[in-house]
Amino acid sequence: MVQIIVFPIHIATTEDLVYYPFSPSINLIPFNFGTCTLSNLRFCLENIYGNLLLTVPFGFGIPLLARFKPRRIFWIAVLTGLTLEGTQLTLSLLFKSAFRTIDINDVILNGTGVLLGYGLFVGFSKIYLTALKKFSLNPTGIFGYLQEIGLQHTLT
Image (tube, rainbow, N blue to C red; front, side):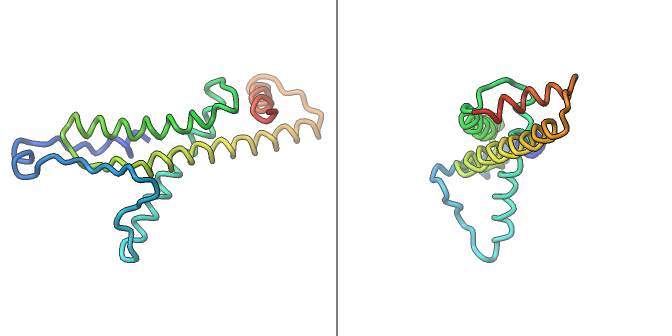
């Protein structure tokens, strides 16, 4: 994920600053995808899907790494999107490089990806818990941990 968001970092030279003044591209209008036309539709869709899919693994894995109440997943999703875009903005300002566009749509899509990943986690947890119940299994170790986390996030 870091490679996609942070790299490549273009560090502006003196010549760059003279001939190409720093002017970061920032879009704060939700659902305004700018110049998406039929001629560049593929690029626009790749950007949308890329931002959405980028954070699905995070949404799926976060319940395994941190304990939180399921109702807080929305705020975790929002903060994830804001953190990723904030990192891009900070690096853009720090290195005076407008290589990346800061976009509210990316925040929305990254947050949606976290929610989608979390939804997949809850779905798989329900399947896992159903299988444990059906076969009267009492798991231990990591499988017991998965049961505990699954119960925490499927009983709301």
